Image (cartoon, rainbow, N blue to C red; front, side):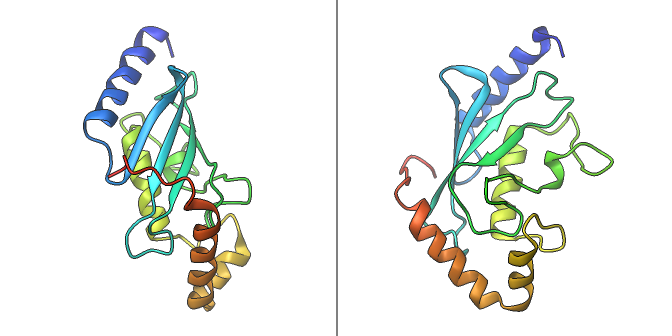
Amino acid sequence: MSSSYFFPRMKRELEMLERDPPHGVICYPVDNNLTRLCAQIKGPKDSPYEDGMFKVDVQIPARYPMEPPRMQFITPIYHPNVDDVGRICLDILKMPPNGSWKPSLNISTTLTSLTVLMDDPNPDDPLLVEIASEFKENRSLFLQKAKDATLKYAMEEKDSSAQ
């Protein structure tokens, strides 16, 4: 993707993220670099992640928006669709035919989808099968472990500027 298209689009997307961010999300460039962003996602209300603040590294590929952004949790999270190093299994973060990314989507949409995934895990497409089984077969144990992990890892990174 030529920089003549990439930079104006990224500038517009960042302005939109600043002006009208997804609920509970702040996102900003790292060191004024338009290809590397940091997102902070407030754990969704009434989820085991509530009151936690989760950092997500967002890498914008050179071919964006023809390719999806790469997102990875920096803050550990106990979730069937996120592995131990923070990789995320979410269909809009993957190219077709295995995923549903399309160039009309944007960073705000992907962050909103990630927040929805936090609130509503997809145990049928897990990265961690054991946690997915626990989510399906012993929900109360899953919820307790997810809350414990949130208390351990996500509380100290809390940032009151997220909505």
